[in-house]
Image (cartoon, rainbow, N blue to C red; front, side, top):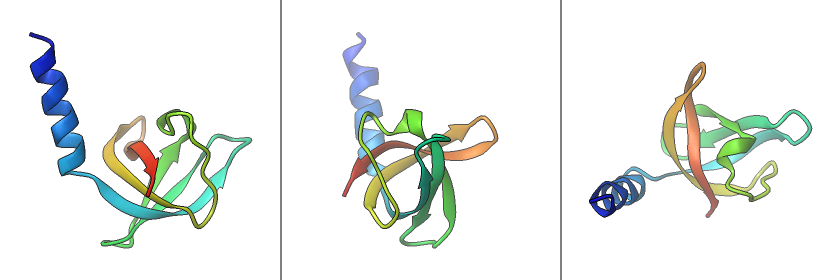
Length: 80
């Protein structure tokens, strides 16, 4: 029974995946911003959403939007 919610989450993550460019990321502080390629709006990214990858300014990334402590935040981040 746990397989169906997992599959729905995986499908939804891919369905709503967005692309963007890392505008700024401070490794020592653990946060930064990604600029959405379509809307050109910035979205917050926290180091815990990186899934072990390293990002730096100018990197193209795929991500989904989720709720952070203070509003929208990038989640499920991967290098494009």
